[in-house]
Image 1 (cartoon, helix red, strand yellow):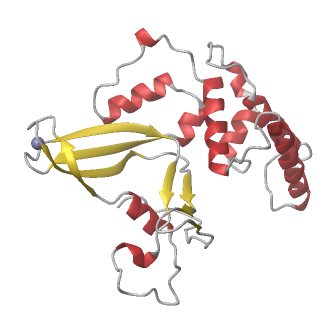
Image 2 (image 1 turned 90 degrees about the vertical axis):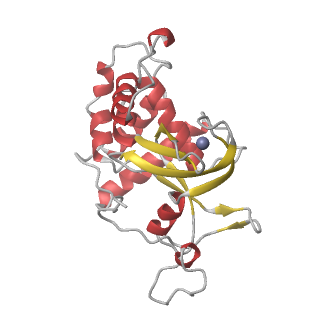
Image 3 (image 1 turned 180 degrees about the horizontal axis):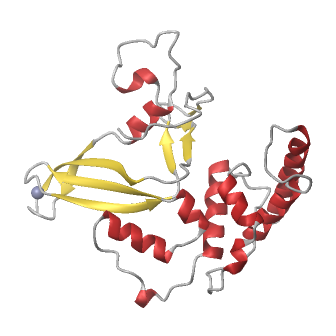
Length: 254
Ligand SMILES: [Zn+2]
């Protein structure tokens, strides 16, 4: 997070102080994050961790961050990085987003664009602006062919890890040149169509088979992906292998 320029500029320029509206929670995590950023930037003007001096500031900030967070998290309980980032982002959201009167809340009905607009009006925080995306789930009845579409907001995607040859090509072993794990295979698997065997169709009122298709209707500016490294089936194991991903331009068009 410390290397995300837009996010850091927002906190370093203290733009969050312009927020005059009543929020769900008073600032606490905002202050933790801003203070850590100030430690990083104490001798520099930009966050560049490859620079030696900046690297030492970065380490100082990390330990500062850790010590402050010890006061927030129970150190005796196991927390993984995904739980941490989810909690951290949602706390900053709550400290920035306005407290809305539920009766006057904006409409949830409409198409993808209308729902997206409504979401950003209700949640104008920098966290929503940078990380949120809209996921579309289409469920089609395989009997009457009618379908419904659901739009949901996500801040991150929790994606199972699949091997290159797990997906389409179960018989072939991967060649030595192919990485065993690739972000594209994990994403393809995550977004693969699924047949639901017992689905109560609201149109034909029968228990039928249906097809579920997920896709990203509106992409986030910054995509957060959590790889599920722990598998429980067929046996409990951790997948520690590296996952191949492009350093620039992740192709999400498929
Ligand atoms: Zn139906």
